Length: 461
Image 1 (tube, rainbow, N blue to C red):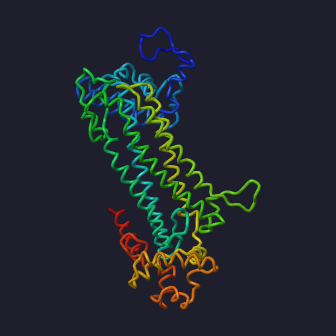
Image 2 (image 1 turned 120 degrees about the vertical axis):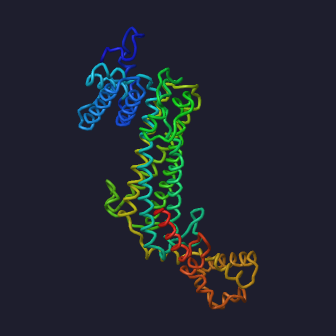
Image 3 (image 1 turned 45 degrees about the vertical axis):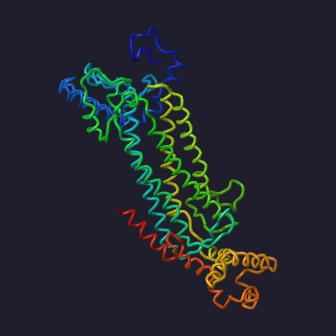
């Protein structure tokens, strides 16, 4: 361990080795190195632009920082724990490359505004990447929906058979959930894209810096209007983890359904070998590991959100070392979301197959057409509540007799109510039950086709 007094001659001795390790963040904040280099280059250009350093010094700093970037990409720059954090590691290497002029880089800047800048640059890129993944996931949902507009699937409430649906309609529900996720990330981006660079440790600086200049170089939309807020704000991370948690909620709900659908009890989908695993002792099994892992990893993102809320809830202004704890949760949250989106996209696109014959049989073997019997009577002038109660009795007696509604004879129907006619059989056939629900946003085939077209238009826009 280096005995170097890293930051100030104020200290008489180096940190205890264990405390140095406890204090260091280089093991994880190295993730920010490219952003730290980019932010530092902008800062160096601003120092030269405002005359705080000479143009030549600014050029040397920018070139030295670019050399560090190339060294890192080539695996030649791998700072250890003695560097404490990525910011000091970069500055120390810069001084080795360009000499004493490297010591001027930190003029009019603190690690407090520096790390805030790096984190925002990082998260801005990650949001763009995740939104791209969400679009890819939506495209896969639409591709499958287009293939299954007229494939029927049981619809459930309370996990009990309710009414049959178009499978495409079911998948489009997830399309719209993901659309809200995409929009949420878009909506929080302006609050991520604010520059704290120049806020200093907490109070700004005495140097004549130009914060708007660095913000423009780094493509920030705005700058923080209050230096205390600028260095201590982590709302943008909390907002991202909240939006990320909702992405995981939606992935987890679909994952749960796929797990159910792939079971012998449901048998609605078959998992392909490229997205399933076997048992170590039961050779007949094919396990839905991908959706199970997605369902399990959801809790990790929730946990990172909760951790950030707890970190922030009691912090006095401005910066506190507690804020070092924002990064591991953020990095892991980003990687978890991206990994789960990738895995679920592959699973849907090439890892499962809907068993259309089994689905067709499933919607033909229950009482999910009971509402349509009540609707049939209501259409013939019978008050709906009266029709509802009558159908409830029909279902009860049919169950007792071991029959489905389709098995009742016309005579039996007419004994129940004289309004029944031969067309009752068409009215309660699963395909007609689905096709008839043609209200806006409903599961009727015509509506579903329109919804797919609208979704495609929305994606193009």
